[in-house]
Amino acid sequence: MTHDNTQGPTPAQAVSPTRISHLQRLEAEAIHILREAVAESANPVLLFSAGKDSTVLAHLACRAFYPAPPPLPLLHIDSTWEFDSLLQFRDRFAEQNGFELIVRANEAGRAAGMNPFDHGDQYTTVMRTEPLKTALDEGRYDVILGGARRDEERSRAKERIVSVRGKNHSWEPRLQRPELWRQYNLRLRKGETARVFPISNWTELDVLTYALVRKLDLAPLYFAEARPTVLRDGALIVVDDLQHMRLRPGESIIDRTVRFRTLGCWPVTGAIESDAADLAGVLQETLASSSSERQGRIGDQDAGGSLERQKREGYF
Image (tube, rainbow, N blue to C red; front, side, top):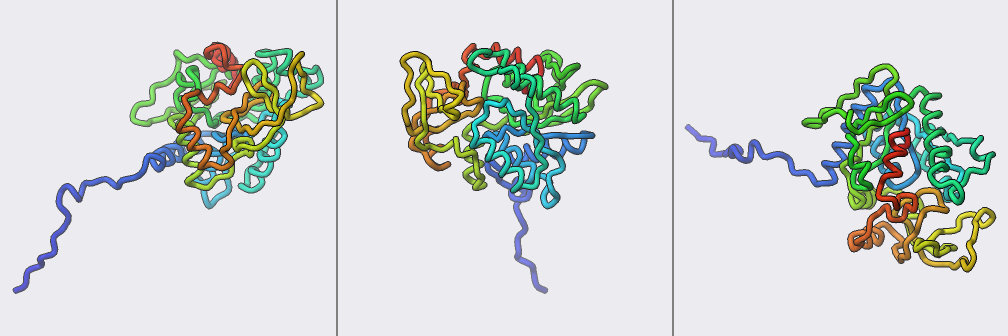
């Protein structure tokens, strides 16, 4: 009589969970949210600014539904003061990844000369918020996915992953739904829509590290190169369009080696001096930085009150 001396796993080994990395957990969570949102929606759309966050989110959407083509279009709201290279990257990304790309702009605002030099918050409302709401209504989109993150700014930290919008896409922070045990309520009443943020729990470092690990292409503006700049109110403004740049007395255009941590309209987005020409260098600089990512957004310098008001009115 022979005995089988092969030992099975110990109880501890039998119940030991598979170890996965921090990035893998974030990726799995985002893919789960994307699948839930698309499954529960009648007509979803993904807002695409071509910045690093929306680029990573769109890549996650490709992974979530592979090998099928992405089941939702990209929607870009063109403020008409976008960086030219960002628009080129936007078009290239959509084509290479099989997305339908929808671009909307407020042509009446463009004809009226709305601009970030003269009109401040009004410009954001007219050239970003209003065309966004119009595009969402015209497309009859019920679930709108976006790349906002909680760590970016304090009003965004108030958002749930699924953030219900009321009439005219208004937002009321006090009426948000609980999200216990990662259960997301996407049931919508008539007239309601949902903004969904699959990378809400990511940080700037998570986004950059993920892009490095997955070998993702990001917009060239995130990498250092010599660019024409103006020093204004302590911020380095890259002059993307010489014809429409307005110089103040005493200002001059100087080539500096700069890159961006955050992207918006070029006249109101500050760059940083940097030698980081690839993702590894950008990540290293970001790890060593003690400043906020959104300090480059000149319009955010009122401690968040302006952005929260804009979000309540329908801004993403």
